[in-house]
Length: 137
Image 1 (spheres, rainbow, N blue to C red):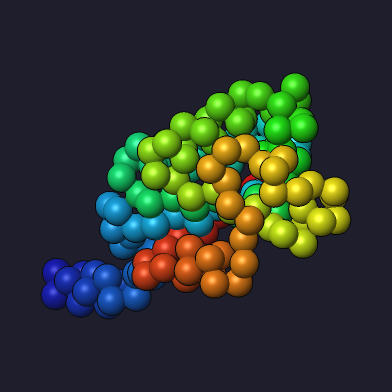
Image 2 (image 1 turned 30 degrees about the horizontal axis):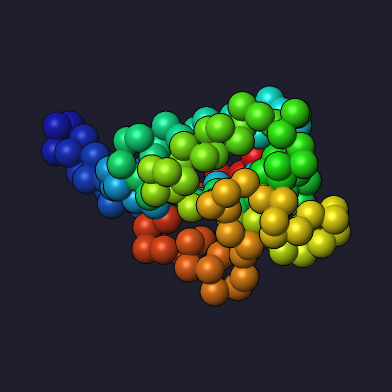
């Protein structure tokens, strides 16, 4: 009976998904698509906590999410933008979707300081880093 349990335990251990074995400094890529203040704060706040824990963090603001990092919307997203500025100051990467910016009439000069306009190379490098984990809000 004991041998059977040991073999079963070993078999289960072999099939643990690699995500369950995430490293302490694996990169995090957050895909933020919302301009809902609560949901946006959840995504940004989660990224902030993971950056504090030593994970390299990139947040990709796309779809309605580009509104969150537009200084034209500072009245609605001032607290969000303060945290984003802190993320940037601490090495976090803030990327804005250029197609979404164009759709919503946001230009590069409207973005919070330190945010960058994405392109396939920049966004792809952040998304496809070795061992990167992704979340969406």
